[in-house]
Image (cartoon, rainbow, N blue to C red; front, side):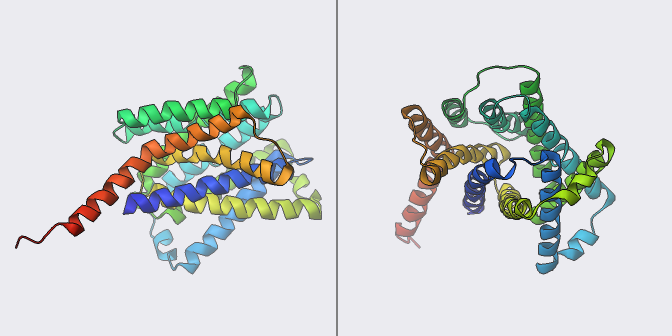
Length: 304
């Protein structure tokens, strides 16, 4: 039951991520991406802190040990700041298509880290599903070249995979909301330090009303993303949770088709099917088998 709950939460994360990618394609236009990222992270950190208070979980936050605070700071550094800076810096030098493909390899790095450091069992069914998901990612995004900017994006993806691994371990002791708060709070603090060093802080006070509206929309989506993902990750193996997130790309394509009138090509349609098949291969058969066993147990006669 816990795995089913985790799957549904991470599936919701993928839906939110797909909508966020679609919205951010408009939001970042004419915007300093570093300032944009900092403001989003800071606002979401404030939202999550409010949620912790609302859920009366502040006592858990106050009782964190020094080691746990250091773990949250590491999550913020490795996942909430450096990879964002690398990604947006590289994005100025490469295409969105290349960036999209490399970003979606996070699930591969997360699965590798989970195997070696978390001792998660990677079965043959997952390996087959991974091939389907990788093929789907290639069909939906593709990659035309690989150079210095692509190497930076790949490094960012590896760092996000490492951060997810640390988060999964920390989630054994802490709630998903507190881990999400730590990621966003420390992440925004590190990005603020970067803005101070590069002289970009004055741009925070030059944001227009329209840009603040886009920041509000993006922040709401990011809040939904981190809240659902970290609470879902608590109940799922890491390699399975990150694989589900590959459904975000098909969702973005469907939204573009629905609201922008973009036609879905035959190649993209095949990619959509492969992505759905890959996720179903990881979860679907297991859920159907569990449901069948549950019905069988209920229908079995009582021999006592």
